Structures are given as structure tokens and as C-alpha cells.
Amino acid sequence: MLELGFLKSNKERAIQGLKKRNFSDEALQVIDHILGADEMRRTAQIELDSNLAESKRFAGEIGGLLKAGNLAEAEAIKAKVAMLKEQAKDLENAMKVASERLEELLLTVPNLPHDSVPFGKSADDNEVYKAWEKPLPNLATGALPHWDLAKKYNVFDLELGTKLTGAGFPVFRGKGARLERALINFFLDEASRAGYEEIAPPLMVNAASARATGQLPDKEGQMYYVERDDLYLIPTAEVPVTNIFRDEIVDEKLFPIKMTGYTQCFRREAGSYGAHVRGLNRVHQFDKVEIVQIVHPDTSYQQLEGMLAHVSGLLDKLELPYRILRLCGGDMGFTSALTFDFEVWSAAQERWLEVSSVSNFETYQSNRMKVRFKDGGKMRLAHTLNGSALALARIVAALMENNQTPEGIILPKVLHSYTGFEVLN
RNA sequence: GGAGAAAUGGCAGAGCGGUUUAAUGCGGCGGUCUUGAAAACCGUUGUACUGAAAGGUACCGGGGGUUCGAAUCCCUCUUUCUCCGCCA
Image (cartoon, rainbow, N blue to C red; front, side, top):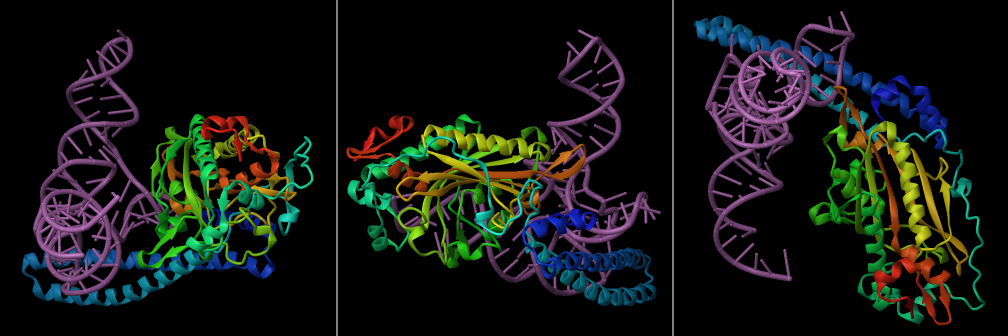
């Protein structure tokens, strides 16, 4: 969440930022409500503190009086303390109410967009940051979309997934399952080579973790929830991996902290229907390798560049046509300050598929998470970043469609040693 | 799942109702000494909120209670360890 101190001294900048996120004048009042709640909390605390200080002083005096055998005097002071305690109860309550309101309001405010973020209402307004300059693959007539190819070559089976679980849970089989495993290993190896520590995290997290990275309360409806144990299935490895550093004071020398994790990701995708979600375009469970960084604030945008280069490198090696978008204020995630999306060309569907989202959250997550470091004796919040590198399902879809031939699907060279075969047929 | 034990600062570990402003040791940081380092010695060393500052308040796993006063007593939850059961 936004830092209260920042809001207090930069109200106008906050308002400009939220306007980029298309906040109405009415919605912008949340800032004033926050500042008001803070004021109330402070007033209550100042009174409460002096009340408690007085009680404490009296308690010490009583100790002395009792030791000296001055019972009458001690009783008189006890009566004073009782009165103070009555008042303290009210003050404590006032402070609690104000604090809770403050926290609640802060949670509803998204991150402020970076200066470079374009204005816009929807995905249509995103800026093409890096276009695909070379020609797109030219498929022969009769080329099939990946869901038809999947049947032809037994790559994955959606009907079977429906039988086992429900719609949106693909079952990969044979060479398809092997390809899945190959891509995971390839992505993890590339991330390790780039200096990311490999993490194999839990696939379920508690509410505190989900709140820290911003899934709660904003995306509660998008996560699977295990009520019996009060746990959430992770929508991305970002959640457990970033939370490794929750409530940690990090030694500045460790920056940049780079971690990668492969996990299956679970998303309810409530409200998504229609042709654009066919096949692997949108599923409830998919494999993804995520890269996460926790860095010094001064270097976060430089590190973001590095992450873009890393993801670009993966797609180059997979020989897939892609473009990079800079998301506009209306399409950015709640917690992000700047997000670049990678989209891969899916030749038979003739559309771009999002395969990676790389973001700098600045201090938005670290403030919720309390990831800090000491900067010359002063505590400062670190910056957090993450990106997909990469999400598998749609990569598989694009590889299948773009590389289809009458003999089968020709896999890019870089995968051959991982799959043990060159043609998926 | 059952029985027992435990949870204190970066770590180890004392304290078990009233100068706890949490002892002591280790580690960290600064200094003296040294050509440099080590050793030794001296000093310093948590977080949050609040305050212009001095200072104040809270925090000894979480929550609640007893008391004028709680790290210390009581209740409750959680976690860890040991043993038993079950099990990949």
C-alpha cells in the first residue's frame, strides 16, 4: 500500500497518479478520508500515551507507599489510577477505530503509476513499447488452432480434465507432458544462469501472505480458497516467493535479491467465457516460472530493464514472435507502478497471447510486507519486482500453432536436449 | 489424531509480581593499540507509533484476563520439540 508519510506530504502527486488510474473526483476523496483518519488516530494516541504515562508513574508511587506502610495514601492514589483507566479504555477504543479505518482505506488505494505510464481506459490504450519487426509466420491453408492440434498429436486433453476436475484443467499427455516438463526445466535453468536463486515454495499460502503481495483484498474472488484450513491456492509463485522476505530487515549488501520459482498457478478466472478462452488461452491451472527481485530503490528501474532483457532472451531462444506493451493506467494491476506485458503471436488464432507480465511495485508491496533495509541508520522500504519467465500454457499454444507442419510440430533447437525429441507428432 | 515439554533482543541464554531503563555471553558497529591484521581493552548496539526537541507510549509467540503494577500469575489459540498412532 501507499506510504502514509508520502500521502501526507505529496497529496497532489497522489491525486495526479490516481487520475491516471481513472479515479473519479468522488473516488479521489479517499485521500482526504485517509488523512482525516490519520489525524484522528494521532490525536487519540497522544492523549492515550500521556494517560498511560501518568498511570505508570502512579503505580510506581504506590509501590513506594506500600513499602513505607502508608496505606491510606496508597489507596487514594489507587482511586486516581482507576479513573485514569476508565478514560484509557475510551481512548484505546478511539485509537483502534481510527487505526482500523485508516488501514482499511489504505488497502483500497492502488499503487501510483510511474510517470512513463500512458493514460488510458483499457487494454486498447496500451502502448506498443517494442513491436515485432520481422514478418509473422505464414501458415499453409488448413493450419489448425492448438486445440485441434492437441487432439491430432495427443498433446493435452481438455475433456479428460473436465472429467477429472472441471473445465479449464488440461491434462497433458505423452510428448505434451514431456514438453511441459522440458519448458519448465529450460526456464529454470535460464533463470539460474541469470543469477536467480531457485525456490520450490508451497502452493498454498495463508491470508497474511496473500495480503502482503496485494492479492487480498483486491483479488479475493480470483483465488481458490480452502476454507477448512483457511488457505489460498497461489495464483502465482510471486506470492510465496516474495513473502520469504516479509517482516525482514534485509542487509543492503544482499541487494539485488533475485529468486526464481516454478509452481503451478491456480486462478478461478470467474466471469471469463467465450471463444477467446478456448484451448490453453485461459485455464484454471497452469505452470509458470516466475522471477522475483527485492532491490535497493535506486536500482529498481535498472533491474526492471534486466528482467525485460531476460524474458526477451527466452522468447528469442524459443524463436517465437513477440511484442512488448507498456500497460496504460487503466489496464495495470492494482499493486504495480509500471508493467510491461509480453505477447506472443499465435499464428493459427491470429492473435497475440499474453505470456509474461513484468512489473515494478516500488514500495507498494514492501510497505504491506515490511521489507526494509538500513540506509545509513535510517529504515527504508525496499523495492520489489517480478515477472513471468514464463507462463507455459500459452507458450505451448504458440509453439504448436506457429511450428506446425504436415509431419508434426517442429520444436525450437533450444528445447531438443530437454525434450529428447525434435518433432511433436 | 493422542500425551508431555517449551516459546525472551541478530544468536545463545538469565529473569518467574514493584530501579527490567530485559542481566550476561557471542555476533555487529565505532574507537584505542598495530606497518596492516589478530588479540586485548573501551564505547555502542531492536522495532513501531508519537513529539520541533527533550522525551513519551507499545512490543518478552498471538489474543484475552487478574492486579495500583505482569516477561513473571490465570485462560485461550498458534507454533516448535520429544514420545505414540496414522501415512507419501
